[in-house]
Length: 95
Image (cartoon, rainbow, N blue to C red; front, side, top):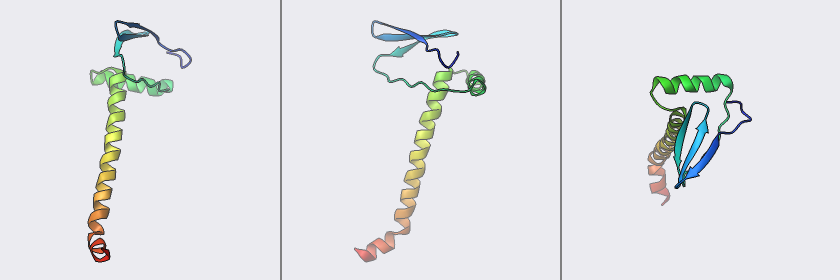
């Protein structure tokens, strides 16, 4: 789909149906959406990878973002634990 075109959408009985050239899909009401722009090459790579995994491009992209968020939180928590452990004796003496 060209970058300047947006999917058409209609809401019926609280369910949002978005039309993309290749399919319709439902988006439950109350869920926030996000438009992400890809180059043609990036979009094709996303399509191929999602297809290989038997998932939609939207689900693949969603899961990738959630994985990145969780990984960032995990790394932050590990770093915080390391700093606390490394400074435990110093903190005890300063208290």
